[in-house]
Image 1: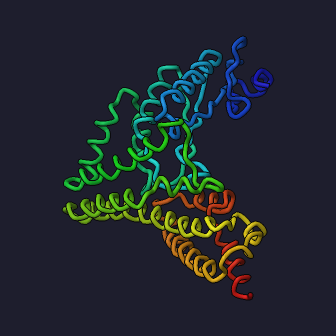
Image 2 (image 1 turned 135 degrees about the vertical axis):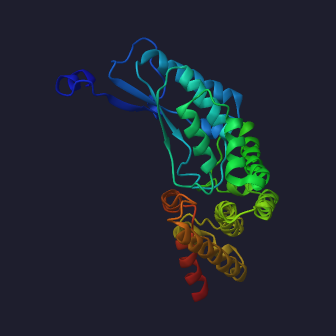
Image 3 (image 1 turned 90 degrees about the vertical axis):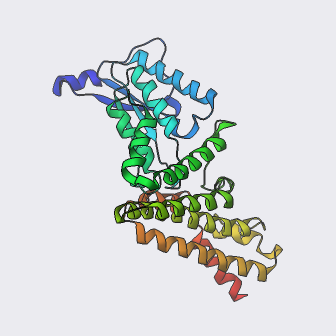
Length: 324
């Protein structure tokens, strides 16, 4: 195909994703010089685990050997982790430097305008993609000092706390954690009440230390992002209380299967609480959808396509329970 394209469009490339069944690089052939494999790499998710990281680097090196031009497709955001806090700056930095050393010169990441939540990932990546010789810690030092002044130390603690939590959650088995059905329990295990409380304290200290209106607005921008995560976790926790009774909220049909085996009054109360929690969260999402705090598209994608948000099922279940 690439050869035929040259006849009508000389110098143009054919790009394809090295993904899923096609992720393993060939060993005995070289690609046409105008074919660009774009390796789908998840360093953002799993490089806290040394074995997974090594495997990904070996795959990247394999593609580097067989292609003249090569690209990367990363996942700084994805459908099963919708604009919730997930910070992994060290793994981004290590990955970008390794890929550059192997000759990758094209880099794309699945992204969203979630700058009040995971913006620091994009910021550091943007700097390093321009100049891989930069030290990410110096990039961060410069960022916290110039963007936040005396509040910078507290904002750094906030980011470091979330980064450390993500590293701890993904180190052991090299698996990313998810929040879509049926793994939404992982969301609650990651965002513990203690972690969220400490994050609130960090940003409260930052707000107190801020010495001008611009810095106070920047801290408030981050506080809105944290509030979105808190409301999502609270709503998911309210739903989980119902599911632990054996009621599957992934669909109304499944929810009705065990309804006769539970205390109806208890379930009514829990359903009302869950509906209220999701309504509160969804109202906040709508208020922020154009403010670059969260990635509205990915929030909605996860709610609907990955069934994180069971509001529709909860509403119908409430009608059934109240009619009995």
